Length: 505
Image (tube, rainbow, N blue to C red; front, side, top):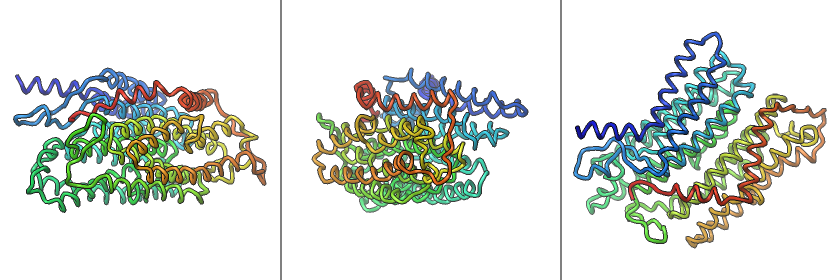
């Protein structure tokens, strides 16, 4: 009876994952049944996302652990954590997926492969399922399996359209880099299991405090595990796949990887460090880590390297997708700053930053996609004079890029403001100054796009990019959110503050 109760309790905590799994199966069946007319499949995906969002939101405020293992302290040895922190990131993933479905309605790349649209959405839901389990996983085996589920789907999607050679090249590079990082992570997990005899993060937290633990081997294992997670969040030096894959993949998938995949990776990294290595949190919200591995020094170095490489590499990019790829790498560096602080204030800053990053990054990719639909090009030189011939898209892209820079009165400024406040509170002034200088560098390549759109005259006649009513509404809604949260951000901060609870403290 106790086992049945445990199972029912566990299943109630993974209802969103069950919905996503059922939706995946329904999409595959719909693809088989409606093989001659697949126009209903995107709408099935939309309804499934909304249902999954409902079951995710009703778990808000709950705190529990699913699939408990045997032992005296079974409550703390679950494989899956359901808490407000995971709900926040799951909603980031679901909102991103919702926008990607809307993007796909207008994407010329996706329209051209409409005969395979069922597989396309099934693979997207495979990614979402992997991300959901990644966000809540508290066991190294579940972490690895969920990461592989997400990765396998994303490998196929990055080269799914097969319209150009670069699609296949993107998929192959993504697969090769992913296989290496996956192998490194699995080796690190095996070392941790060899040292502790457990794969559960809560149990490992207790076991690594033993004086007999080999600290050198543990440190080596931590670096290997971080290599696998760092690959997902595009942090240097594991970022090499990002520009090629972002350029070669369909724009919809590029946008999805830049937000949802990164969000799942950061949620995993935060939970892994907090659950495994934090001994206690003081009344001021500062994390006190076990003295077994210097996470702060490594994260500081990785963060600075990531944002610097990302920003300076973006300076000479002429392809908009490659430029936004390096921009995404730089933003991963900024986001790592919130974790560097090792405090609740830093995690709050990450949650706020991710909320605005979702809107401004998806908005930028949407405008790039709409322009590419008309011009067939992603080259920055083809943006010459676009601000005059297509003012709506030009002004919208300008707002998104200004927000990505972090300038007021946009939401991007609020995101960076909270990151810098967290750094100053932790007295990490030098790191804050380096991050500020990096933001100044990023201003150059974002303004360069504005120069081409508004100040440079085109040699040939600049095409007029007509925008459909649904896309006008979609772009306008994203612009509105950017400007609204730039001046009235209290609800966003309150929502992030209420989602700081991470199970296992």
